[in-house]
Length: 288
Image (cartoon, rainbow, N blue to C red):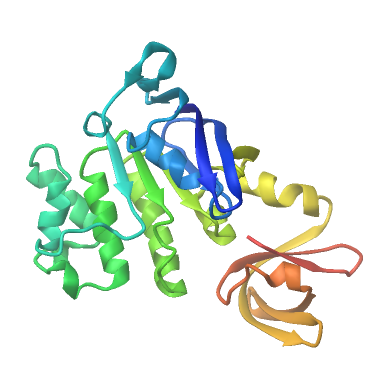
């Protein structure tokens, strides 16, 4: 996958230029990470052909989909893309099976059955969309995207509207689907724990530029905790104590309490996976 594009954008704080160069191995799970308005979703829309860059180059699985210098710009229907939107974009008048089958270029009953089984939708195949939970709707949206047998699967913050337990379960589902169908997957996210749990490589976008790239642990942790003792755990509770916070973390069968400042707990939630790092008995906490 090779993406090198420029696009003038309007943001909350004024106009800026999206100017990114992203490359990764096929069949990788790639996350585009950053704050709202950084240009993350624009990258996905450009890949899918829903938005035309001002200039640049997009190559997926050896096929050139966009090249401004050669005036190549394949329409969306000719790009083998599976796109999962934040709002699911399902057809309420169709059953689960009909929604999934709608994504197929040609009806393949065996492949359809395999998708339903892997996404655990077999028992729900005859249900209408309005009878499903948020997590079930998201699984249908992913299954429909995979049904296109895409060269690339695009996920636009697919789990942001779900509760923690559902989100955690679906993160495991996404990894399973990614591996089962040998997909190249690109996900937009601003959730640290999601990045660590799912990604092979992460590109951090800020104001339209790639400011960091690499493995999640290299991008977010290594420079900060090199040489320190590290433990992985899960957040049980976060309680304020005057000007600091007390974070209770389950590590194995033990619970430890860490004093954290407001900046450290800003993006933490109960249930998040974290890394506790300490040196000379002065621990600090990082969301993993």
